[in-house]
Length: 301
Ligand code: TXA
Ligand code: MG
Image: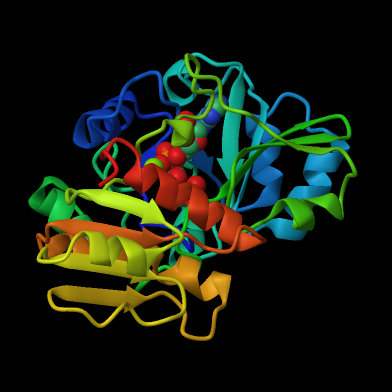
């Protein structure tokens, strides 16, 4: 199903067979829990044990939208959905097709991004088709995703907001609701939210992240290079192609194009992809996070 962030592989949270299919299709490790999608804020009452007042405020303000809340789960939620954890991740997506679907069903939908584990997330129905083709009974085509990167995931405890995954709802936007907003620092051994695994969203092509695209292109003269630029055109050199995320320098627009352009560049089977680092402010922080994971695991140079 489409959402405003990325396409999701959706299953009835109470249908064990369907939930198992999500894990097997994605080749997703079972320790990696799923986000539960709902169509109405009132649905929270069936799923969550105690809703902190701050969580209700945030949901009322940002839903439907790209904010996922980690809240204490009710016993009715199957353990597989939360990978045995006491907290459940919940959001209401801001996409008319997803909302219609959710509001017409008598159960919530678990939906991880519709990509094989570790690969680039899908922001068009065509990406999902290319990954899974006829393995899926239905692909709902809701057009290109308008937000383009995955939801911000936060924990809410009393007055404290903990950011587990950065997204287009930024730390600054959350500070309007609490002066106690912290970013969870990843521990090596324990990926609390495996959107936090080092390598993720990865192209098949060797990929590097840099502030100095021109310098890196010079170092690799003679190679076929794809450049993913923020707002300026790629250096005009032999063998170099490129995509510009936002010619007007808007980070929201850059986020919207990010995965589609990565898919396009990756499909060219070049020798190297060079990703230009964004300004590390606002939504740029979330984009840099994804760029860094796309480049992780590929040795630099
Ligand atoms: O924008 C989004 O959130 C998209 C769309 C489809 O809604 N979904 C998405 O799902 O990005 P996925 O599965 O690709 O990423 C969900 C992240 C994972 O890193 C997972 O570990 C974390 O959320 N997560 C889910 N439930 C959790 C829980 N109970 N405790 C901790 N982390 C959780
Ligand atoms: Mg994902």
